[in-house]
Image 1 (cartoon, one colour):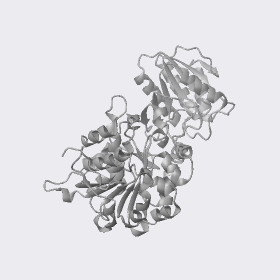
Image 2 (cartoon, one colour):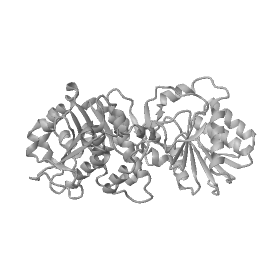
Image 3 (cartoon, helix red, strand yellow):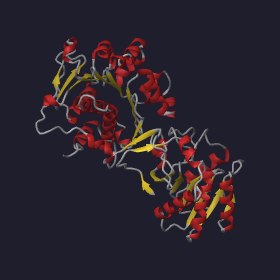
Image 4 (cartoon, one colour):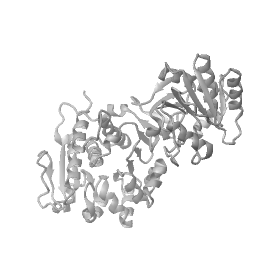
Length: 494
């Protein structure tokens, strides 16, 4: 059944290449290629019901075979498809070879290579599909460049050509910018993280009538995670909603810590304390007098904050360094962001102290962007973006705690849980302070959570909520202060 995936009302399982190929390997009647071609033809007609000139660009594999079957069906429906067959010197699999013969016998015009006649009203990318193993080159790369140069809408089959199905990475500049993508049989992680959303456009899914495995490789977070947002009963009070302590905001960067603290407050935390580093009086927030202050000197009283949720690092610079040994050894619940991560990344003893927290049953969440993640792993941000899922798994293994890897399709991973890819949000969040808001919101939700709560689900909720606030942004950036108010307006009604 054909469905549009985003926005996602429900969380969905995503599957790996190996899981998808295992499904393909079974005996299916009618054959999968016939089902896929029919699904593709139906979507093409639904998206462009008045289009007559349809250009189908087919590669040498089964993805090209899906395109050939669709071309034959579109021809039978009275449209005028033409096929550019890009062989790239590779042998054609049996099913795709059969589809080529049938399309020719049906009278579909098929050309070897690309003869650019122009005038198409829809272009179908059936070049590569599943399992990209290296950067496209030769005829395939040239065909991708020509697809992107067309003015007609582009519908990609299974995946935009040049996009990795598992990582969302585009290993070269040769990748299709599709308006729509039809994912077949299973949903692929690469469509939703890295360059996936930019490459795929609107994402559609058809399972071709075959049930996917119940043990996916990751999960796409949908709006259903908001249903478990904290509400509190009629008798709730600030003491029952938990406490948050935000530590950060070195001179010149105090806005970051204030944003985090305001976000904790807006999320519903009962009491939020703000400690601005370098401020003798703790640093009152005139815009949010509800925030209470702590001075850096007061942090020596460990008992006063040990059981609070501590959010540390937002705008902290290196001024956070002297506090980190105590925070890492004493805080029961700790969210580390920004400069706290940078300081830890440059200090092996602090790295060890972080990884040892889990053995003491102290809970930690890291919220790095790609550059901060690269510092924590001793690599480049390009390496992080080349395989975001592998990067978050490496962070999880190295530091033994929950991780939110921010970016397009933010990832959430924690010990013992299936990794999650967030479905909400857009580039409106690419503004200063939006990450500080997320760290504070996560801390605020955590403060309200009952003992034994599912922390992975809680982090997924915070990340989805953060992105959902941007989904209503009509144009331009969403400033961090406005983001907090937008998130506050999304509290579920009871």
